[in-house]
Length: 182
Length: 121
Image (cartoon, rainbow over the protein chains, first blue to last red):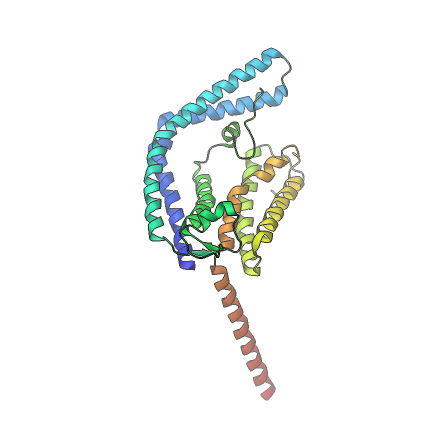
């Protein structure tokens, strides 16, 4: 069982590295992306500084100015995601094929024994194609997702491809909505 | 990094310190939890609580900026949680445990034999 675990760990490291390499080839190294990224980061920092200096805007003119800046930043962010989208779509397709291949290899196999019973919402993933009612039996897909969740972001951070905090703050995240002056 | 109440000029630098120390802490906690044999919801809940408390205490002690404390506590949480679950679920921990127990048994047998030999002389 632990051999499968190690194998899945290596598969997720390999796919994360492959994904980053492909994204670098198709997106990160292009001049358009570099230019847009620098622009977004510059604007984010400028906007943050302005917000810090002004605080809660009371003047209508100031409020309008901030809103205009935010609109500009949103447009740049949209352009940036458009640049990314095409290649991400291609990479996504390739990875879906790769994942279905691994899925068929590990189909119905218990790859790990979980030390906890997952909540019913997750059991569909953690117990996929596994017979029996022992919900601590773990399927390939669940372990692969967990490995990818922890490894991919770390690899992105090490390689310096992770989006900057200032930029990701402007987009919505799971903990809260976007910070706007409106 | 370990100067109490220091002011960090670059907030990103402090967030990076938190991020990476959290990853390391999650791996260690996963190993310890797996080795001790903590299971179930208690294992996960205790990890979430202890990990967050550790980051909170570190932020309070080593950064005088207390306004963004929640941002510090949230930093890298999901990644560290996933890492913890992977290490926590690794059955290799069980193998390590058996090797350690085996080592302890061999060590005690050797110690008994040598003490008997010492008594004979």
